[in-house]
Length: 233
Image (cartoon, rainbow, N blue to C red; front, side, top):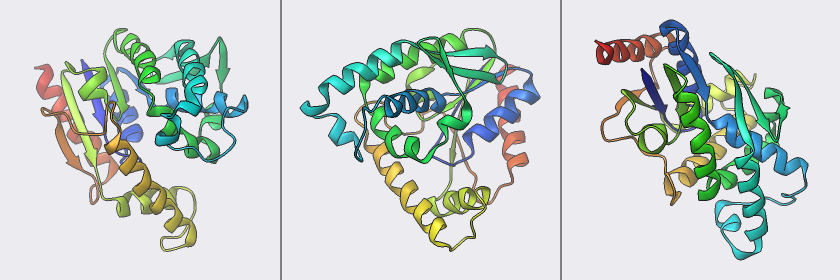
């Protein structure tokens, strides 16, 4: 059983995917961590020094950076089993805390827009899925990575609901300046993801869309588990 869970940033993909995998006794991979790992390494190597968009990185001035990022992607792997994976680049592991930093948030959309990077990481994701039953969460799992997945889910929610959720997770009050900054960031990321020429954010034609604005996490998990079991019969 391969379950693809897609959706925009902060729609609950990782939380839902991890809990679904636990209940079904199968593996889980948050594929976004692969892109974050490459971004983290590129920042540490000094490849990004100014704010960089997907349009910037597509230009001639970034040709060498695109090449180098692709080489990083080819040396990237997800080591582990179950839901415990460590992102490894060139044999060097990265800690999850390193992947959640603000500078990674800033540059990861540009890195994720590079088609050769996505091609290289697609192989890593498929290798994980081939190890047995698994849940993969991302933005193009059901459309590109695993188009033949047995169960496809698309989690969606308004930018406002997602921003409030993320703000509270980080300890900020809804309506605060930090909350407003998160909202602006999510709106910008949504636009980049949906306009990306390669593997844009879109629900697969055969995906089941679940709007999570007013639904508790546990209820979303049970809905996905029910859909997966329905397919497995």
